[in-house]
Image (cartoon, rainbow, N blue to C red; front, side, top):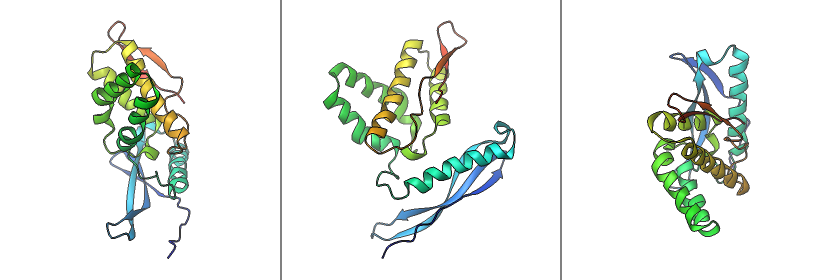
Length: 192
C-alpha cells in the first residue's frame, strides 16, 4: 500500500521567546510499518526576527526542505552517521594520508560531540555558525586551526551534495573571520 504524501506548510508558533515550526514526520517502525509523528523545529529567538515576515520566510524555507526530502533515502541520516559512514572512509581512500588524518582528528576533537543527532538535511548555516563560534570561544586555537575546522565542515557538505545526500547550498561558503578578543584569536561568521 502506497502512503499518501501531501505538501506540508507547517504550523508556526511562539513559545518561551522563541519561534518553532510544527510538522508531521513519518517514522518507520521495527516491524516495517510506519506512522506519522508530530515534530517541532526551533527557528530562532523572537528578538532575532524583526517582523513576522522574516519568521514566515524561515518557516517556508525549512518546510521546503521537509517536503523535498521526505522521499529521499538519506533524509533521515544524521550528520554523524554520514560523516563516519561515508565521508571519513572516502577521505581515507581518496585523499592523502596526512589530509585524511587531519580530517579525522578535526572531526573527533572538535565537531563530533557538537553536532549530536542533527540530521544532515536539517543542518543550517546558523548551526554551522554556532558550532564554529563555540569552538573559537571555548578553545584557545589559532586562526589557522579555526580555518581548517571551517574547511572540513565545508568539505563535508560539498561531498554530501556531490553524493546526493544534501540538496541545499554549502552552508559554510566563503565566510570571513572577525577579529576576536585575543590577538590572532578569532570569532567566526560563515556566509552563504
